[in-house]
Image 1 (cartoon, one colour):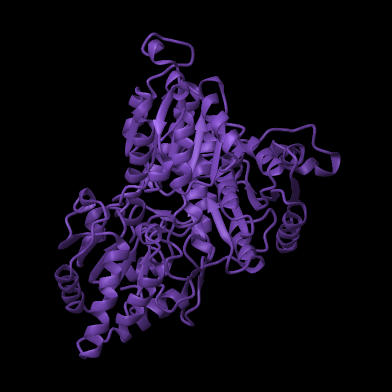
Image 2: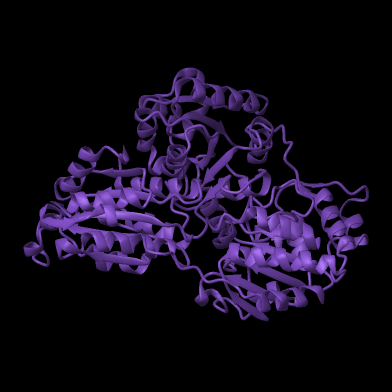
Length: 598
C-alpha cells in the first residue's frame, strides 16, 4: 500500500487500463489531476482550443483503432457542459470515451458556487454512467468501474466528476495489485446460430446488413469470411462501411435515404431475407418500416438487448457481441459446406453484382463552378486504398458516402447519429493522434469547417498532419435543400462580399470567408481550387505538404452554389436530381427489362 493523492491514483488506474493519450483544457478545478499527469509523464496530452473539440478528439482517437479509449479532460462548469455534445455523439454511436471534469469542493456543491454545475445530472441521459465522486477513497474503484462499464455490452461513454478537495485528499492505494474488471459481452449460442442459418437457407435472395457493431468488435475479417462461405451479398450501414471492401464481389452497396448507392437500394428492395448484425435499423438507412420490411424476413443480432425489436420486431432476435456471433456463423457454415448442406446463391449474388456494375451516378462533370460529384471522383483517384476518411454531416458527407470508396474497417470515421457540426476537424486530429503515420483525409462543407475552425491550430502545434478537403458552396446546403419542401431559401446563405480578398480573387468575394487565409493564420497550409482540372493535382500536392510540414493542409474547392444531392423519403423513392451514369446499353429501360430494379 502507498499513500498518495486521489488524483494520482486516478492516473495510475488509467495507465493500467491502457490509456496513452488525453485531450483537454486545464483549469483551476481540475489542476490536481493535471499535476498528477505532469508528474507521471505517462499519458500524452493534446491541448484543445475548445472543450467540445477535446471530446470530439477523444471520439476520433477511440474510433481509429480497436481497443482505444479516448480521454477528454476539462475544468468545472462550462467545460463539462461543452463536452455534452461529444458524450451524446459517442453514446449514440456506441463509442467509449472517458470524460473527466473538475468540480467545486464538496462543501460548495449546490450552493451556486462559481463554475459549479450538477454535471452528473446533465450528462446522465447521454452516457452509460455519470458520477460525481464524493469520497476520496472511492476514486480508484470509480475509475475501475468506468472502464468496465465503457467496454461491457454496448460500448459507450462515461463521465467522472471530481470535486477539487476529493482530488487533493490523500488515500491508501496499492496499484501493484490492481486488475481491470472482466469485460462482459453477451454471446450467441450455437442453437441460435443454427436457427438463423436455417432461416437464411430457406430464402431465395438473402442479404447481410453489416452494422458498426462489427467494426467495434474488430470482426470485419470474420464478416467477409462468413459472407464468402455462404455466397451472400453484404449491405453495410453507414457506420459499418468498410467492414467489407467496396470492391469485394459480395459488397452490394449501401442502402438508405441519403448515404446510399442506387444499386444498394435496388438490391435491398429485391431481397427476401435480411440478416442484420451489429446494426440498429437507423431511420436514414431504413426509411419507413413498412417499405423496408415488406416482403422480407429478418434476423437481428445485436449486443444490446433493448435494440432487438426497438424499431421493428424481427422474425428472430439474437443478443450477442458481433464477433462472438460471427465466429459461430463461420464455424456453422464450414460444417454445412463440408456436409453439402449449403444452398447455392450464386445466381442471386451475380444479379447483385450486375446492379453494382451498371447502376451509378454521374461524377465526371467538367462544369465550372465545380459540381461536388467531381470532387469525390478526384479524391478516389488521388488517395490510396488505405486512406481514412473523416466526416460528420451535410451534403458533403452525404455525397461523399455516395461517391467515395472505402476499403477497410475504421477507414470511414463518421458520427452517424448525432452529426454535430464542427465535429470533423477535432475528430480528424484525434484519428491522427492515434496513428500519426496514417493517411487521413477529412471532408467538410464550409459551415461544418467554420464551427470549430480554431482547432486547426492544435494540429499545427502538435504536428498532427492530415488533408482537409473543404467543399465550399457558401450555403447551409443540406438545410437549403430541405427548405425546398417549404418553398423557401431562408437564413441559410453564408456568402458576403469579403473586401479583404485580393483583386484577382474578386469573383470569390461573394463566398465570404477566406478559408485559406484563416488556415494559414492558424499555422496550417492551404490551397484553393476553382478549376475542376486542378482538383487532382491540388489533392496530391496537399498530401505531400502534409507529409513534409507535419501540419493539417486544407484544400478549399469552390463549388457551384446550388447542387441538389440524391435523397428521398423512402428507399424506393430516392430522387435523382443530377444525371445518372447508367451503364446498361439500353439505359434505364434496359435495367427494368433485365429485372435489375425488381
